[in-house]
Image 1 (cartoon, rainbow, N blue to C red):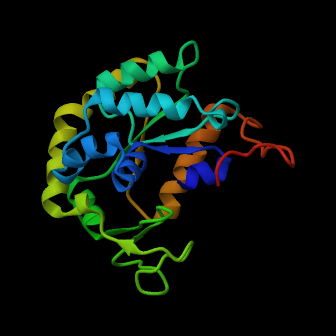
Image 2: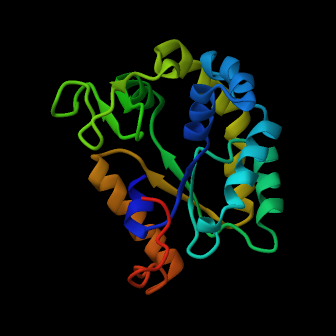
Length: 214
């Protein structure tokens, strides 16, 4: 989310889109709900269809976008290549964090149900469980329980880890340490993206131009 704000480009989170579909009780949401509740990965064909619809929107066409939580499998990565052709991804970032730290972070994570702002039990909003950004309710996600988190990590080891080899072979992968404060990790990411794209590529859009979603 911070990267999208920093570069004024869309933040595309498949998790957020799926949870919004579940909340709205759309056909896709109802189909996805049973997977989310169990901490399971959503089938590739459902995720790819959803991403294809999002990437077809105008705000993704000019300055790029940040994909968050996608792709998760090699099948999704191959599907994404097809969606972007003749273009391609510029960079894939693998944030490395020890399993025990992931468990601790996700179990303590709290999220605003309206705007998606992220807090934790150690860094809560100023007014107890009311979002600092929009005033919405801040809750623990149903899939952030310890059992669901462990299941997601097991699925990652089995299905998502092969993406490292996929994107490494394509010379698009960069591994970044996810340890440290949020500001320290963010600074590492900005340094990496700036080096990849070169000076001037992410200059702010001219006044009045479409800067994408807030």
